[in-house]
Image 1 (tube, one colour):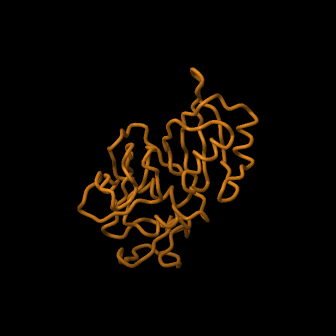
Image 2 (cartoon, rainbow, N blue to C red):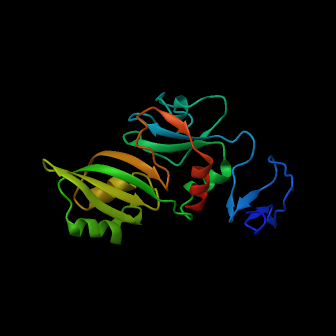
Image 3 (cartoon, rainbow, N blue to C red):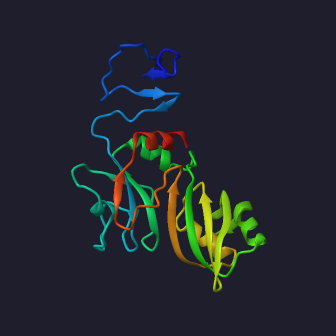
Length: 213
């Protein structure tokens, strides 16, 4: 990979035998950063209901940082409402956090919602073409019904942005209020084996996949 020019150090082609300082050098493979700085941690947490996605809470509610190791100070990437559950990233990697959270990069997040009623083609089309909300138009990248049962449906929604309670507001706007909401994937990262309150480290491959996303 070095020989054919796929690896760069601080923007310059790397060469065989080259040594770098991982604390200061930026190493990229195919234009994607490698997380080599010492001390970087990346946690994938399944946030339970009732836990807030902040570092602290003035109301004394449990926070996501209470559920991961305290050896290193980490911050949640983006938000997930207290009445929603599912995957959230916590890290001290500011570069990765900026890439994943900033709307400009549009790293998709996937949700599964249990909604009232059964959305038809018209409602699903409205979700992806755009719905007028009180803070401007919003839309999903993808929307599909996964299951139907007893007057409710499971709807998978993929979002490219994450305004406050946007998934809930979109589904309510097309006539299908949300009864429960779970985030199942952040970009390409998912893990159906995690249970509420459990976490694991991201692999280097997963970190790179988030940069690529």
